[in-house]
Image (tube, rainbow, N blue to C red; front, side, top):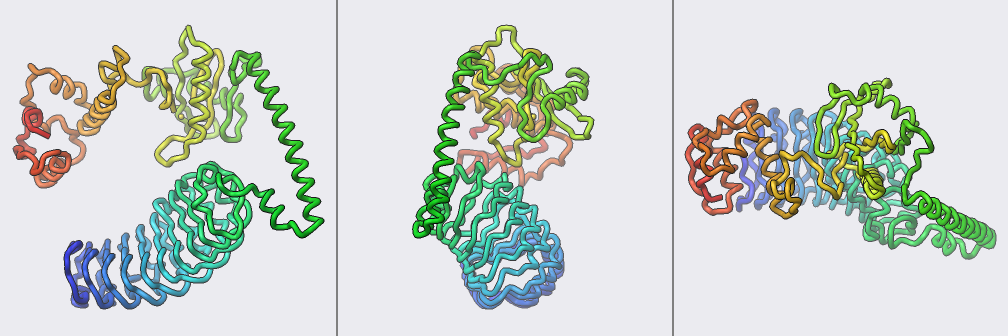
Length: 507
């Protein structure tokens, strides 16, 4: 039952607790007042409960912890108060918990750590106090967001937060947190936003890409953070100001500054020497050193030479039977190493006229890929660059023509004319392959592109037969969402819909 976005008022009826088979209840964005009936704890089959954006008062009923199948609980933007006494240990399927923007008090329930499937946790905009419970660090599947900002939390940030390897957004701002940022936070490789502003934090910011690229506003109004963030003071300068009254500390600072100056001069010297060496090598960034088996740059800690041998052995010198895909610029091979680790190895096709600029492009590609950290992108473990082989688990950033010709627009594949329509063409081919399951893509492309081709083929006959066909209502909704006309044009039912109908319809 979904009654959201209306003008309903009054209290929620306790009698609704008798609806034993109710699985979905949403009454968000209304004018509901009163309290949440404890009888809602009897809805044993309830999967989703959304009462957000109303004027509901009182406490969060403890009985909601008796809903064993609940995976989404959203009570945000209400006037709820008191402590949260839900028995979260009895809610193993909970994935989304949003209690934000209320007036909840007390401590954050440590039992939330028992909801191991949680991927979003929002408790921001309340009056929670005390420290951040360490038990929350057990939620290793948190992915979308952990937002506990705008509360009255104290104490330090748990170092165990480094377990959130998939978390994208961490917001701890507008609290009274003290201490420093744990260096272990640099292990949170999926972070795209981390906001710790308006606290009492001090010390150095961890060294990691997400902090180096972060704006200073995520760290402002603290007791004294310093380090790699652009806009924050260097940690040495901060320490010097803090300990200006101590001669002993001034001596230490002087020694540190002298060491830094020495290291800076040394680095300048080494940089000039390296530049000179690169100039002598015609700007080749890596040297073969006579090793005919190639030199490997390792992103993680493994011996490049042995890894190279393992890959060649695992693929039997890149035998075709291990090839799992190929394109215009390289082929991908499946390699199971002796250690049991499974890798996808992309072997670049070497050209006889390969020049230094091509090698430089290859190296630039490598350095780009080492900076990418995303859950939907395969990680780069290493690469090999030598006169015999050149390979790496991606090749998406090459400036030259790369890709499978079946997906390239004709003007790009044959005339090298790049336009915005090229991307539209490629996206359309991929979409057709998705819809047809890969089996009818060439046939559909030919039928749609030639004016004289027969277009009486039924749409259902070219769709992927593995999933069941959508109902007429669902198909109409999808077509209406994609159409640029309002109202969308009428089409025959999906069972009799032909390709010619789609060609003649104005989208």
